[in-house]
Image (spheres, chains in turn yellow, red, orange, cyan):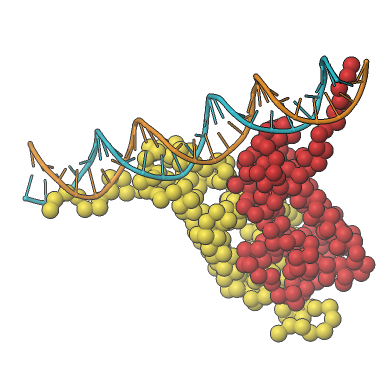
Length: 196
Length: 196
DNA sequence: CACGAACGTGTACAAATGTACACTCTGTGG
DNA sequence: CCACAGAGTGTACATTTGTACACGTTCGTG
């Protein structure tokens, strides 16, 4: 036997294509993604696309995977740095109002993912994973109930922020987060104790 | 002069096309929308599409307009029926957990809109309108601050619900909403009074 | 160095898309 | 009943898309 055994000519090529695909999604949306557009952006020939990926769905899914990985890393990191409940609250406020954890473009990308999950089961799983990751990061600091509510608040307020084009008032967000972190301790259901 | 003056052969045709387009969006997503697909679904010839609409974007935007109109009507109606703050809270809980205000399909459609707004300024305006409408409906019952927070919570929890596939615990949602409606009255910012 | 196997790519092609437009149909005024 | 203006449509076409695959290219081995 002779010849090379599986040694790629350009080992980083596949990853560079994924990077380019993500850039394209964040800039123009999934609707504008095509083999040719991604190839042009990555500076690789068209043939590379079909060589490295089984289809365009795989490219898009890989790009979304990269986005979710990036975001969840920063998400976890930001929350892990907090040592007190107050610091955790502040981290949440920063997630919603600031752009240290996710830029506007990246959040727009997450919404693209939420829509794209109809096109492939892999993307649907990815979206579900993202939900779980953010919830887990929050349960490090809050009760499960509070984490779920805060998670929902983050999700929703980020959308509003994205569509409005301007971040909400930090003090208001802080007050809202603080209020939600207390929901399980003060049993605030209007009439009768339904809680388990 | 003679001949008919602007009397259409089939007055409802345009609207039926819009209905079909919305159905298609809710079932398959905007990615699967095309002149031909919509025409087939509406049972009209392809030529009708270019005759009644300036382009595919106009069809999609009209469909989203229909969706937002439907949803905001029910939204307003449900909240207007409430006479006390407690009833308003309960209405919000129903919006999040139930499907009387928006079915899962319809909420999926709203996310499609959030992504699609990159394709046309009209859709972007529509998304912004939808935000304003839901906020206005809430300010009938809550303070502006509380309305904004509750609005965000609805948005986010509805997404989670949509992606999880199952509605959240009603009691938890009720507690969260109740907590948020109180944020402006109890000045709950951790340290020092930042509020205006 | 030469050779061959695996790596990688340019090109070709079928399918689908948006859109234009020459055409037919329809009903109203004369 | 006829003519005609405007409503409505079938078809054609340029583009863009995903994908296959025959062909060049590279590099370890002998």
